[in-house]
Image (cartoon, rainbow, N blue to C red; front, side, top):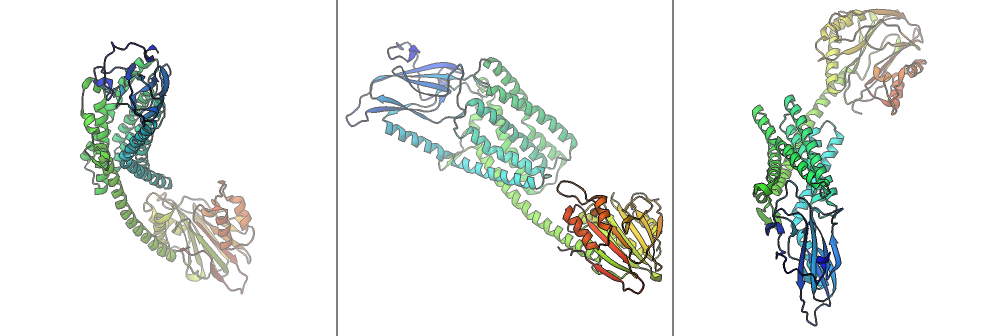
Length: 627
């Protein structure tokens, strides 16, 4: 501390300029402590301020300021527990009344990392001395100049943040859209990197780097997977496996490197420098993944639209500028490469904002993403329009297959209710009068939901209508129907229940894996069998039951049984038995399940046996398909 005293003899000290680092003035790659001393003889005028103030620009890395032996300020903390900042604005310090004296600055430079040049350390620009108001005005001018020079970058990062928000929002709505998640990961890291490393926040170096390193890792990995999906290489299982191993090794090495840097300046600095060098040698070559993906896309000759190619090319260029710049900085104090400096240098300025290759490529990438979103939105609207037209066509078909008016069944009152889980469903029923006064009732459920199930329904109903003329017995009809459907349901199946109502009040029932109907409050014991379309050689059995006036039959699909409330509880057989224990129409049964919690298509048919002389009725009580 004697070196801060005014009377200390510094005549044998070396002379150095304060407008540039000591590393470029003969002290290459020097770290640790150093002292600056300067003797001031101040001659003021009567109208000059009575007090002095000092402005010190950025200094590598932490420092203390002494005026005539007294500590007047500091920035960061010196060892043994050092703290310094990744970036720092100019600082001002009061010096008291005007007097001659000695200004001494004690500087500590942290150990050099693998990407640090040797030409750093100490002052980066000349300190300024003046009255408090003048120094404050100079500080404001410097801060304003810095903010003005960063406005393009802040605007660009704001747009990236907006893209990240919209991408995350889209991904939360559809978790299968991994492209949106990768887009969100990459675009979000852009403003996060600026927030941590470019806003001159007074966060200690260890905290800043500890947070910044994972951000940079996520940025790289997100961009790799973004390129993988944009280039449609995710179907290449070998490449995907390679990429997973690649990402794992890269991530571990990158995070460990960040941990060593976060511990920089401790008593293990020598060991940490070795670890930093080893880890850098591991992860730097791995940053060439975009080149691997580009080669794979060329080899596989993927046919992509212009929007995908534009985003992929801009993303590739942006990443490779970062990779080349990062690789060029590694061990540059030994290689003396200047490529990194050239990539950082501005190509031109706009309103005081320096635009270098990295900023330009990020801007082009943003514009490419906006263009791609525009193109995708147009294509999406076209696809949605075509899909909506398909659904309208399917709904029109289903309105024919699920009749809105029912034929009368001699001797019975019939009610029906149909409630699809989506716009179109996979349930079907038909009431087909046949010769001799009998009636066939067919009820079924195709596996799956939506448009595919509706198309299968149209196939089944057409086959039922064609076969019913020749095969009136339920078991025969199911057997013939199964033979025609086998291999035509694209891996799916259909359950089906057929009732033959005879004029003598006898009911013949056969089932293909469908829930048994209720006769009054008891299930009819129908022989079990496989659903339609599962096995070509399946044969079906039938049973016969007699009905009396007042008896009621209830047929339903499993959407009624499997209705599920918010807690996950099923409607279940007990509620079903209670529901059908007394006469109930189809609409009441459907409404009970929907109110409980519909999870699948629901179809219910009820038939009530009439006494002799009573007039038959048929009422369709299902809600409209457009509702």
